[in-house]
Length: 190
Image: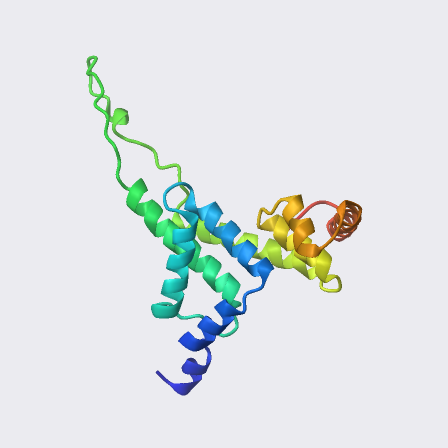
């Protein structure tokens, strides 16, 4: 490994320090990500712990990527791996023969998007996320609300996170809505 590439990834100690320094908001985001990807196949806490273990043992975090994003991607990756183990067990149900061959009875269509489609969707989602967050670089509270909303947080959690009361939260939501409407009057177009 050349010195330039060694400097572009975080060391195990740097990752551990960053995990210890996670803010309450970061913990909430990571728990939300784990909850979202667990989908009943694996416990969210187990998924989170596995992501921490792999982040410290086997994965490399590029220096330009936030540790929260790195951990969120690890959670998604681990959950996808668990999902593939479960989803790839195709259950064949015998169909009563009623005359001729019915090949479509065993030709189960795959409803999941292919890898390329998932990558395109992920890239589009990241572009959307970046554009939305860029609108609020001057207002960290509004930015936290937008980011939390995109992560699926409830209003009560967002008020607790930002320290706003109901009136202050409603005022920020109006500001957010107006700023997005002004920036994208015809709706989001990448």
